[in-house]
Image (cartoon, rainbow, N blue to C red):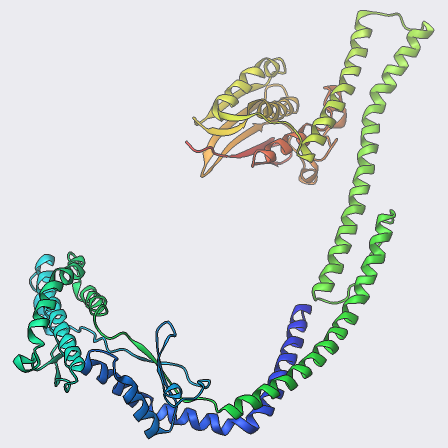
Amino acid sequence: MSFRFRVFGLVLLVAGTAIGVTAWLSIKLTARQIIDANQTATRSEASTVETFRTYALHHGTWAGIDTVVQRLSADNQQRIRLTNLYGQVTVDSDHLAGRAARKVVTSPALVDPRPRLTFPPDEVARAMSAGDPAKIGYKLEAVTLQNITEFRQTVLFARCLTDLFQPPPPLTTNRYGIPVSQGTGGDDSGCGKQIAQAVSLEQTDDMSYVVGCRGEKEPAPCLTRAFGERVGSFAPEPLQLYLGAVPDNAANIVGRSGLIAAGGVLVLVILGTAVIARHVSRPVRDLTAASRRLADGHLDTRVPSVGRDELGQLSTSFNRMASALEASEQAQRRLVASVAHELRTPLSNLLGYLEALQDGLVAPSRDLFGSLHDEAMLQRRILDDLQDLTLAEAGHLAYRRGALDLADLVETARVAHLAVAEAAGVRLTAETAGPLPVHADQDRLRQVLGNLIGNAVRYTDRGGMVTLRAFPDADRVVVEVHDTGCGIAAADLPFVFQRFWRADPARDRATGGSGLGLTIARQIVRDHGGDLTVDSAPGEGATFRCTFPAAAT
């Protein structure tokens, strides 16, 4: 099992034990009272919500609701609390009773006196049959505005009667689900004129809420939302209803139980931490000792695996790191041996000729000095290639990138190597599908193409052909150098890009190759975000493929 899951399991065990202890201590004394309060609240919640909603619709305001709260609290023997949507208390039966507010034990129920406008399906169908979206919107807009006006009249009339301490008006629900009053108050209440003036002033603002739905293919849902937003500005605000409460003595007992549970949790955490520390410290000590041996040069140091969890993965990663360091050390030694081998032959030749000249065994001549110069230049090329390779692999090789056409670059490389190819009796051709824009260093890419073309010409017999191809491939640009030479054996393909590797050592040294060109070329291509690969078979030639990311045009 993963170490992380074991820690998580231990934490769950601690939490579960703590919860169990707390529950066992508190349930004994408080469960029955809380259950009774919840049951009572559940039974009366729906009727209480409807009572408060009806009050708000009949009175147009929450004023005077404290009387209803006090009556219902006494009848049901439960605590009632009303708050707005921001948690501000509107009325609380505990406050009305002159006592401190107790903790509620139920989730709030929403008391929303704002009605929802519902269009009858037949009316929507008739409106939709008009065909013109504008006509559909106008028909339903008129219905929406009428319902806003009627509901405003209902709210204002009920609020006016409440302010005058008169009984609320009777209500009826119209076909759109909106409660409306059956009277306007007449001359007895004096509210009619006041309501008419208020409605007249608000009609322009009412229109601004519904015109936004014009042009909708299905205006009914939009108009329903617009109705809700508009009536929310004058209807009584929604409230949250809380029923029931935890008794004060039960809350105190739970507090003492919490202290006892906290002590138990502390003990369990201490014991669990001790177990984890013991489990972790042993492999950590082994890793510390092994890392010190590794730093002292013992690259064969390894640590035993301790499982499949994170500590086991850490041990495996350490062993992989040690193996990589050991392999790197061996590769460095092989590189030094290869460099020494490559420099030994030209240095031996130089030393032999110089000793012969010194002893008078060989007469100095222009040809002899030319040969010695060629040997010295070979050593210099090897050292320059080693320097370029070291900089490229370290990421310090300098590049001057810019926009260029790879098709033009391929043609330029063909022209530059045409004389060498003709001298070797090899036909050099180019096939490009331009333009092929890339963002790259022109000199470095010419260096890559020069190496590939030179190798292709070198390993192609007289009468053969070397073909350069450049073409787009999805979001990449491809350059291929194909020759009809001797090809590369399948067993040798994995070593083509290794330092100092040669398919034909004698032939390659005779032409002055260092054995580092392909390694440098691949690193340059990779630094440009591409890759260099080879495909070959004996007797069928070889194809070297360079891929580059295409530049945005």
